Image 1 (cartoon, rainbow, N blue to C red):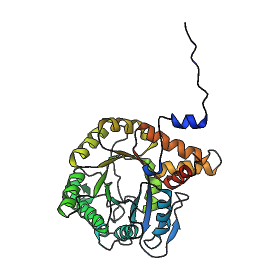
Image 2 (cartoon, rainbow, N blue to C red):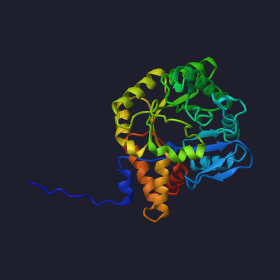
Image 3 (cartoon, rainbow, N blue to C red):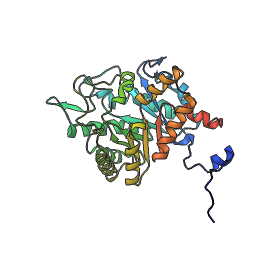
Image 4 (tube, rainbow, N blue to C red):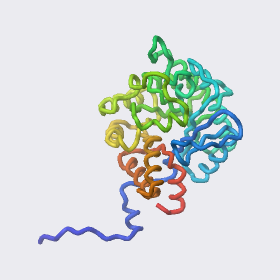
Length: 324
């Protein structure tokens, strides 16, 4: 006997119970911009709803992060002093080090991640040292290692090298271990594309390159096999978590990388993705809660164990209220 197929009509509770992809606040990481100074909470025009904080006002947003039960915060430092080698990046009293110490002092249970890169700290805006008009990979590794150790000294639970220099994970792991930070994790931006979706971030962090671009050391958006190669190299060098960046436009890359590695994979839903959704919602073209949730579901469905998103706090709060 042939029975006709039918689509089940199920209750919302059964639908949730049988969903293939699940979200939780603990898988969300919230990026936060911290600039030097005092009593600063300022809007970021290109990223409506996001702000820059000074170290003394940072606890205001960290308290919300704790209450939302998210997985952690990713801190980006914006210094007053910039030079050719980005020396503020490893200054023990630098803005990122102050922010990390404040975060761990006020909220010891909150996972704090420090972004390890030079673009916010260098006068030329590139992610490494300039030699002969070009970014020099090998000489940059020593500087990045110094930055990572300084952040671990300040109390960072995880360091996240975002520079895309070859060999950065191995160099940083060795430096951390030599300086007694054997338990500090490395969340490497192993797969970071030279994307047009970073524009709002560069305005927020003051990190646009003064000349040229970053295509010589970030990845070509046309390549997928290269992503697997980069991810496997970082796993071999000792990465504990790897990041695929950007998010939604690179779902195929995320899925491919997830299938290739045996460690947690994070997806970074970047500033351009956030800005586009915000703009469409401000014009009444999209429902913000629905679109933000669907976007992060897509990332999780494609394989993300962790999602770094500017919607992290909103999403977590909606989840806790059972509004998603």
